[in-house]
Image (cartoon, rainbow over all chains, first blue to last red; front, side):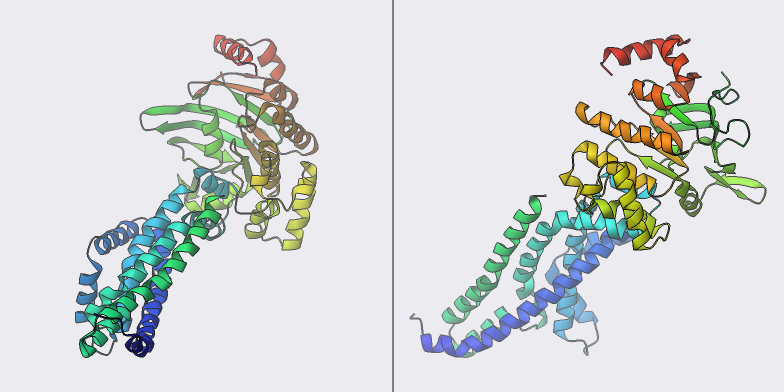
Length: 212
Length: 274
């Protein structure tokens, strides 16, 4: 098997298109995971509602993403695109993880901070918004960053519900042209192209916030 | 040992009005542990009371009950002539709701042993946070108040610093300014110098002496600084096992303690170099 550079050049635009879908899935999914996870972490401290939400998130966290994606895709009406289902499932699934990360951050905020807020009669919204969450989130930024990369690497699972992201694109080209060497190698390289800089960026964040 | 009937001779405005704080048969239990055991005492407006006693005798719990960081198990607390641990509903008293407590505790400020400044805010933001978001002051008014108070505690030049850049003593002085910015009627001081290096204690106590001299804030102070207690307080309450073992003006408690428990406590405190 010899590497065919002409073929490589020909398939590159398609693969870049796939990469773009992957990036979109990751970014939108991540935004869902970050915001929903935060909401879950806060609501978990509310009586009655908290344990219910916690139970649901535990269920999501302990079942495979692939199964969730296939299950939801089979349930929703056909007008909803595979991409939408994929991005929502991915976001909600990872929200179960980020919620735990936020929770550890919130629990890491000293008890004295809550007491000082109470002693100043600050309303609940200020206590959370101005005191607890800024401190909690700062501490968990590195841990949250790691989930960005994990999510990025999980996007190919959405292949199962016909989301044509990077790996699915490579598969299609490979099957059509009977050439897998260049396509799969290139797909792998493109994954690296995104994940390595992201990892470096996260390492930097880690160093910056660990210093405090 | 009837505590409230004999307020100190120097108590300001003594006798005329009603007491500012009344503990009526207050019991506080944590599980099986009884921290306060049917405690009765009262504090007059403007009075400065120091609570002393061995650790675990319930002093800090009294402050925490007043700051509504804890709830009474039995009995009741009144502040400014109104129920505080409880609230009126028709002709009954029921345990105070969270919103009732939020409204009532505004008149009370607290300074903690561990300062508890908000590390994510500058000194200025720490001080103006509650005046702006609780009292509804404008940013300008709150800033003016913050500058004034930080000057009072000798930290006018640190207004834009972050708490982590300050020494423990400086942080505690900011915490005092932060509590005073709410213009409380009652100031609770919970071992405010215990976490400080010895050389930083004096600065904090000087600020508190000044507050004591220049304002008529009612002060409840838990401390091991006996010299400070003697200087600023009108009355000293000696606690033991959740009850008041002895009380009186500082000269009497420190120079002529009557109870053996007070004597042995004072001896142990002085032996430890306080």
